Image 1 (cartoon, rainbow, N blue to C red):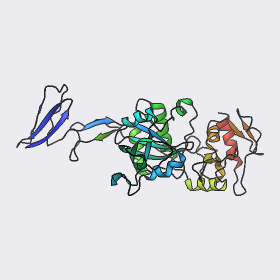
Image 2: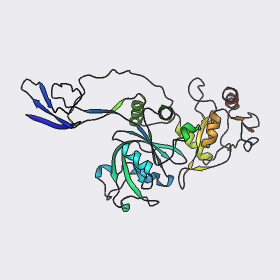
Image 3: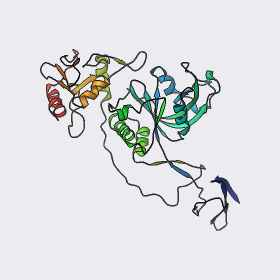
Image 4: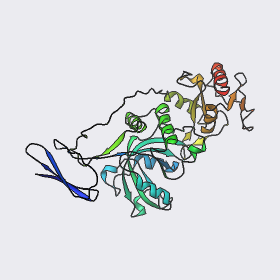
Length: 357
């Protein structure tokens, strides 16, 4: 009984199932690599290393991108309601990268000017034949990329606080590739997402697989079974801190998403604000700070990074700020709301352990 005929490096191979269940293959002379003899009706599969991509979305487009095409749009029903994004027609770089992304690749979705807001998985690319097929009217689009939501939309955008140009210089364009041989940004970003964002289980598991260099598999048949020889695996455990997002969210509302250091208010979209919560005594080892209101400041991404790196000091008695390099900030008094107060011990801890370390 003939089971399958598949192309393979210019040749073909044929499986024929015998009564004794031995699998015999014949192959053309053009096949220049060794194939394993497979038993019990195994069907070969292709295995590849997955990559991580970052898609950058205009804040005004975020809701449309996160929730995908709607019913009645000219796309297959499987893509309705699933995340997607557009590839601009005038961007050769983005068009080229969009051709490299493969099904199963990990995608971190970023809102331009704010931070990361979702974790998705690539499914399919569709070329645009008519500009009326996309909901975005700011430019012409070459293609759309369809994804599957692992964590569709974070409760709040997340900014990892990277300021080094080796990180920030990467985030240019509608889509960028973070391959396995580009470890600094990829590993640091994914590790921070695991440690500092309350991810859904599917997103967390997928990121862990990517960090441990697990492979994603494209299988030639739904009935395929694993390879005869399984590669060695090492099991590892990771500990992460689940932050009290309800607490931080409430404080952000009290401060109306305004930075307590500089007084600026960033926006996530046309109506919603954006700010970040900073723990003066950091969570986790070796600091083991508490996740309580008295230990949290609401700040903009820039001053969140300054606090993390110890370039910003606060007088615990007067709340006057001393900035390591920004004279426009030095001398200001930390903004405080009537419904919020800080424990001076946490300010002192920040000054002694973070600033002076």
